[in-house]
Image 1: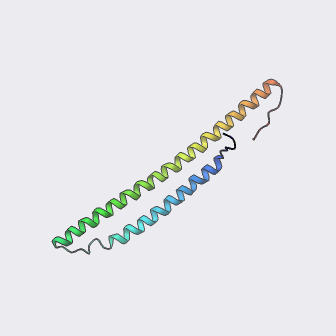
Image 2: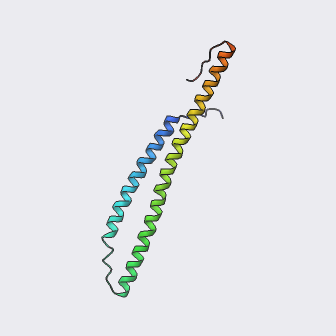
Image 3: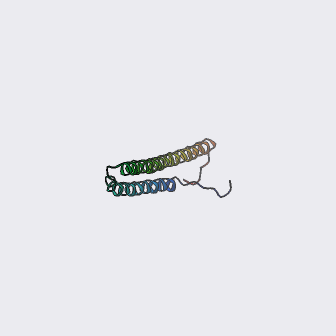
Amino acid sequence: MAGFSIDPETMRKSADELDAGKEEVQALLDEFTAALEQYADGFGGDTIGSLAGMAHQACTDAVNECFTTNIEEIGQIAVALREMADGHEAGDDESAQSFKQLAGELGGTATGPK
């Protein structure tokens, strides 16, 4: 593909940014959950209050599960991105070494991006 370039360091930087975003979202979720917990006991003990409390808890659980799953997936994407960067870098290093070896066997010098 013409003009296509992969920079492992940029991939690692992106993974670091994903991790930072993940931590920020987790902090916001923790703050939101703490705010919701203030209302958990405010529904009263009668039938309607009990039903409202159960609905509140079900919604809180659903929100927490959704965000927790997304936070975990962001972390997994960051790990995969770092692994991809390592793989590309190893492949580039291996290719460069192969060309250097070939050039040495042919009696020339190898020049390239590294």
